[in-house]
Image (cartoon, rainbow, N blue to C red; front, top):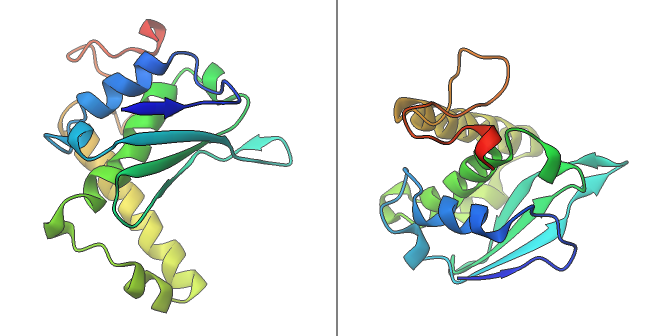
Length: 149
C-alpha cells in the first residue's frame, strides 16, 4: 500500500498501515486499498477528519487536520474512517453513489450519522472503542491504547 502524505499530517505511516492491515471490520482491507493520499482537511483551523473513496475503492483520500496527529484518539479516528472503506468494499453492504446523490442534504446527513454510529458500535463490539467513555479509546484487550502511538 502506497501512502502519500505530502503535508506530513500522520505522526507515523506505520500507524495507518497497521490500521488497514488489521482492521476488524474487514478481513482483507489491505487487499482492497492500493493508495492512500492524506490531504489537509481544515476549515477555520478546525480539523475535519474525513475519508473519500474512488469508485473502484482502491484509492482512498484521508482528510486530516494539522492538529489531528496530536489527538490521543487518532488511531481510533483512523479505524473509524477506514470502517467506511471496509463497508464500501464489501458487496453485501450495497453502497451506491447513485442512491446517495438522490438524497436530500438532510437525508444524507441522517444516513451518515447512522453509518457513523454503526461503525462505532461494531468497533465497540470487538473491543476497539468504549462507547461508555467521553472520548474514544482502545481497550487493553487489543493493546491499542493512545499512548502506544
